[in-house]
Image 1: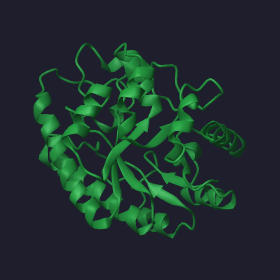
Image 2: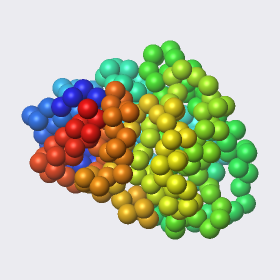
Image 3: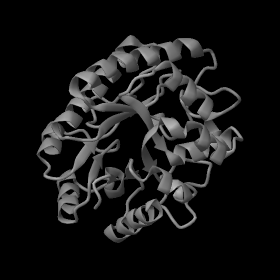
Image 4: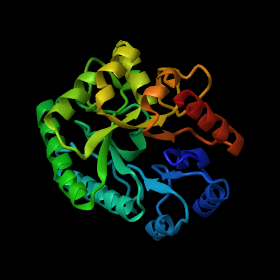
Length: 282
């Protein structure tokens, strides 16, 4: 597998981590250790000892007591835990010579872990400006550490699904307006966007925005890309086919890191989708 193509651990969902690692080594798959992997006391050791090209992502390694990583939380305990988690991710990335560490953009609310990917119960009484400020402060603190290590820290765009939108958006960096506002305020060489194409597709549908126009407005912030597909209503990590909306843009981003982030795939399906991305990227 080409060095800038990775496969998310989501593709091996439900398999023991030692089997997942063995499959990737045997088939020369670069592995993104991602959210959804269970807590294990020795997970960092497993990660660092895995003899393959790898990188940690977002909520990896999962903590013993689950929490929602939120760099924009007004709950200082949650925000500090989130900052320390990201610093640890950068540390692991540095040790394993990973290209970067990425985390999701912040929220104006604090969902329960079991609400992620589902309808979130929230009050509309939140201070959007305050959460943006806290998010910026968190990122700036993390970037200081990223600078020390010489590792990029990327922010992944959030997904706003129709079932979580009633005219009020509690999530930061979902659409081009929020993304560009953030990057204008955080002007740092180590920051960038991990574009999740599926998130942008759902958000654009929810807010009735033109998907191609949204991409065009944020293209200069993009440093890496997560790939999966959906029906525009829910982010459910469906596999890529020849009608995948982003394929026609691959040639413009061929030098970036690309991560296939689809659920429960066979080796044949993984190889087919990686080949699809690479063929359109050439």
